[in-house]
Image (tube, rainbow, N blue to C red; front, side):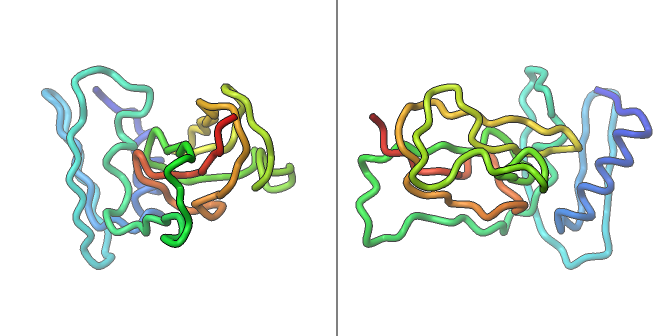
Length: 157
């Protein structure tokens, strides 16, 4: 893995925005460490050997990001959870002036785009893996999300 200057600049901006104090990426012939002057936040991540579309984004988010959960008084066992496949910033619409992809109560089908997760200036459309009705949106717009963090609860058909 090697990065050009633009990718390094984007990583620096992402690290500064995310609140992480330090990020280190080390490969066989490549090593980069980015430090900020913020209070320390410790993140430990292991990168797989299989090439991924955004391998750098896996280490650039704070460990203390809040994990929203469904209310404990509600039985959510019959719901399917749509989770984030990556670390990044959650967006409910394709741009600020466009309508949101889905709202609570909307019907979705497998393959329908429900949100975008932006990582390193790449906007990744997240699709529903199940058909059903959106019953809860678990993340606020423009909030950072972790890998495998629940985003939506869907009542399957």
